Image (cartoon, rainbow, N blue to C red; front, side, top):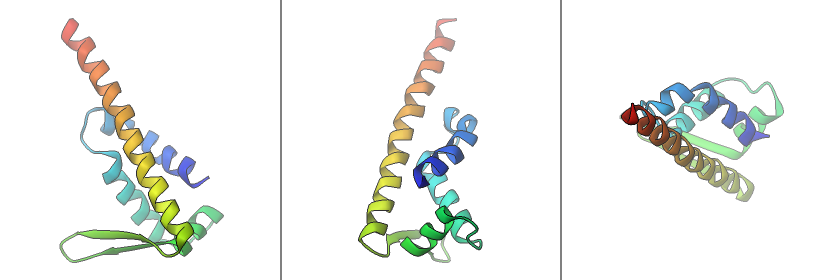
Length: 103
């Protein structure tokens, strides 16, 4: 459920990803901040609030930590998904670039 919500967020930003203006890892931070900085309204947001700790300093550096074993598994799964999505968008970008060079 949580990864599918994150996937929807990434899909909403496919244009930026395919033009390499951003990365899935950067969007992961944006998505997580968005969820954590509002009152949880559904089970996904409640789980994220309970399981993940997000801290940011004045320089914009951040740390994301699972509050429990299940939170650490969740953070790891989200990061792995972001990396996998990055590989997917990179291959799409290469495909698009290759097609444009052939013209």
